Image (cartoon, rainbow, N blue to C red; front, side, top):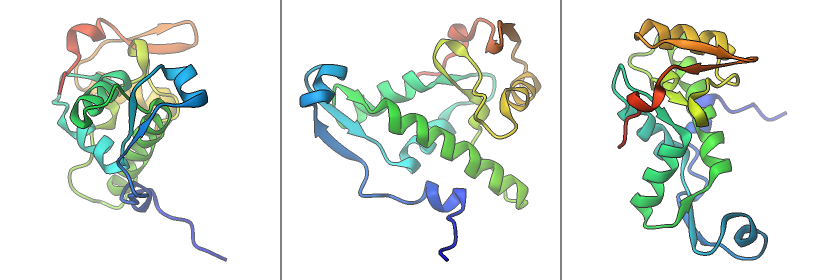
Length: 156
């Protein structure tokens, strides 16, 4: 039986990415005309590492940056979101192994400033890490978000 890849291995699996594709067929109906970059996991991780303490970034801002970097109209929302999740789990895997500096994944928010319940430890752990850096996290219904997150957004 094949051994499962670790999160760090998944992060460094290039899968022939990044790749720029023309938006055609169903994709053009969903995203419009033009081109889209499918980023690599390490590329998404690198953007997450740029965010300084006290600031946050949304997945949308990461996508805008990657689209500008590659000269495309958009960056793939699905793969970017998956790679943010992989980067978060790889960071925790490194931390658990006693590794050095890790990607500050907790500074990456979902759209609207919401916390990511799929991060290691769920939204509660995400909340703890953000509050430890001085952010105010409030509850909206069943979800948490960073108060006034727009004022704290880092634009790479």
